[in-house]
Image 1 (spheres, rainbow, N blue to C red):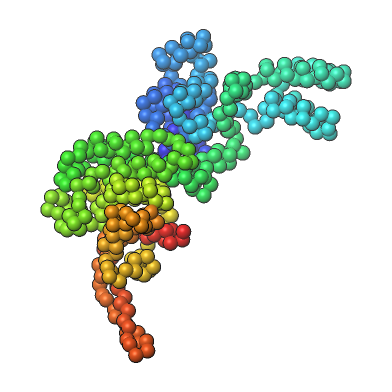
Image 2 (image 1 turned 90 degrees about the vertical axis):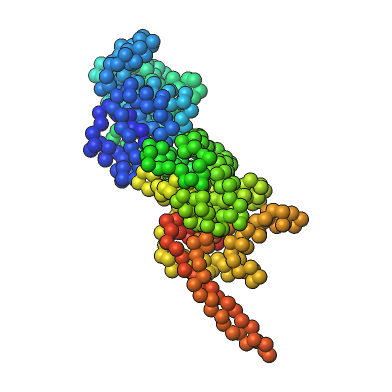
Length: 481
C-alpha cells in the first residue's frame, strides 16, 4: 500500500523508527511542506491508501497559498502553519478520504493531558488516588497556578477546586485538544492522534498493521486495498511505457482508454462490507469485455490474428469469465467473487492484451494470495485429484469440455443445475488444465467376479506459466470449503 506522510521535520532515521519493518513492503511518500501536501491531496489523492499528518508544520515555506489561507482566518502565516495539519485533515474529508485511514502523529497531543487528568479526577473523587492525580496536574501548570490551586484545595471547597481546574483546562489546551473540543462541539468524532513518544511508536505501528498486515486487519479491507494499490501501480507503469502495445487481436481497443476504465472501477477507496463482491464482479465484467471477440471453437485453436500468440492458459479463463458474467451465471448462482479472482483476472488480461507480467510496488498484487509458488509435481498431483473428485465424466474425459458443458445455461435451462456450480473452482481449474497435457494413460485391470474391469489413470505434464502457484493455492482453498 502507499502511505502519505506529511512531516516538516523529516529524516530517514525517523522514517525507519516510526514505520519499522513495514518500510520494506509499503510505499511511503514523505512531504515536508504544507503547500506541497495540500496540492498532493488535491491532485492525486487516489495514489494514497493511508495518510499520516503532523499538526504543526511550521517548517513549511510561507507561500502565497499559506498567506492567503492565514489571512482568511485572520492568522499570521506562522500561527496558521502551527496548526495547518488540521487544515489538511479537513481537506482530506472534503475529498471523501476515509477518516479511519488518517492519523495524526504529532507532538501536539499528550497521552495524559490536563483535560484527561481533570476528567479522571472527577471520576475518582474522595479516593486515595486523588493526591497522585493532583501531583500529575501540577506538571502541566505554572508555579503561580499551582500555588492558587493548593490554596483552593486547602480551603476544602470542592466546587471552587473544580471550577478553577476547568479554568486552567481552557488556558492550557494544546493544539490537538483545542480542535478535539471543536469537533466534539460539532458532534463529530475527533480524528485519531498518536503522540511522538516511545509508547507512541508501538501504537502507531499497531495502527498501520490494521491495514497493512492481513493477520491484523479485516481480510476484505486488506485484500481490496492491496488489490487496488497493485492495479494502480501496474497501470501507471504500463501507461508510461510507450514500448508496451496492445496485442493486434484487440486492436479495436485503445490502450489508455481501456486502462483508465480499469482505474475507474476501483476509484472508491472505501467500501461497505456488502459491496466487495459487487465491485469485484463489475471489475471482472469490465476486464473481460475484450474477450467477447472469441468463440468457443475459436479460442481453442491457434489464432493467426494474435500477435504475439497468446497461450490458451492466459486467454481461456477470461473468456469463460466473460461468458459466465454476461449470461448471469455468476450473479444467479451461489458464487461470490473475491479479491483473488479479480486479481487473477487482471493478471491474465494484462498478459493476454499487453504481454505484461507486472505485480506493482514490491510485488503488491502477490500479497492478495495465500501463496504464489508451488513445485510442479505438487501442482500435477492436485490436477489429478481435482479431476478425480470434480470432473469424473467418463464419456468426456477432457476437463475443459466438462467445464463448458456444465456451465452452458441453455443446456441446463430446465434443471437450472448451473446455479449449483462452483465457478471459482472452474475458473482456476481451466487455467491449470489449459496448460496441461496428458503425458501417459495408465490402464489397470480390476478383476471383479467373472468380468474384468479397467481403470484409466492420466499422467499429466504441465507447462511452466507465471501464475501456476497462485491457481494451485486457490484450488486448494476451493476444496477446503
